Length: 453
Picture 1 (spheres, rainbow, N blue to C red):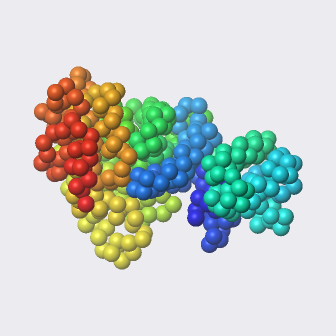
Picture 2: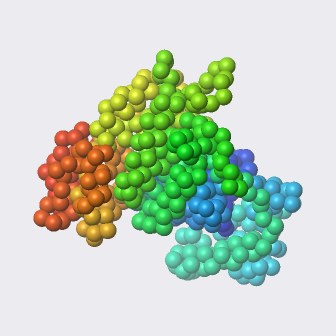
Picture 3: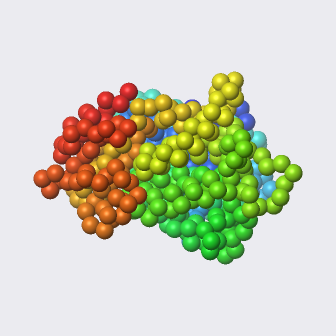
């Protein structure tokens, strides 16, 4: 319903900030980076869980929008696009029947109008229309006496024409700040998209953004900063900057298997615990102990427009602890869960990200090691099979030959001795570090993984 309604930009893609009605029809037209990231992740996981291509299509369209309109030349991602142009909210996005007919002609205009629910009266101010999917492709194809595939091709051509016409309108202002926390979310989303959708260009974009943050939003001593604009980075990073970026780096490691990203995630996690951990009652403060001295340092526990930093930290600590066999990380995660417990039971809908972490903690979780070279065809086949499915309770590690293999052995002791068998990519599927017999066969590997409840 969200994607079919006016909450979604059907011409240029991406989601608006929120709906003003219960039908997801008329939105507040601002577009936020964090919404694109979190919704892309939701649609990617829906695709993995169901295999329905429409969810993959939406995720890819979100990324098309972000890479086109919210990406800086330096690689970071901008905050948002405004709702207003020429002093009117939504003016950039809405249409009258006459405007559509002038661009597409009467016949083609009527076809697109039928699909997007456009009427003379309109559903917005002044007889204008917020485009939404008013009819299904199958229903409209039957009415037009064409195949759904043929109709989809025609509708896409008409969408492109209308989008090109919209591009000539006075454009929306853009908030061109680059924030570490929101960029961390988009890095995580793009990395997950690269995995599940087999789109290496998404990994490239995530890598560029991560490298930008590591280079331009970090002090010489390694302290993260919060904001970057026009060549200037400022403000000591908050806990969200750390936990969201660590999340992005974990996903980026599991996408590229570049050991440096895992190493950076671990270093930032250690810094996070030193700067933000409450040594008395546990939990992570929002501000660091090196920041402005406040009367009281707050902790954010409930999810809001973005997930709670404490909730994301729980899952980060669990994943990194499971990968690296560092029990102190999992101990900190369990301390956080103890702090949350009573609040979660009283209001679970306010803690959705925490519940995801709790599911991982309760398990069973699996550690999957692929011994092989990342660019080898047999390794790629194994990775593709794993990534196609929704398996949230796992960590994935690559143990290649050569220097990268030696580097990962120093960080992930589990992989020592887990090498290729018979010169082929080999999967080691483990549960709490107890590993099944290694296999070179993709199908056998997936049987072992799918035994996870």
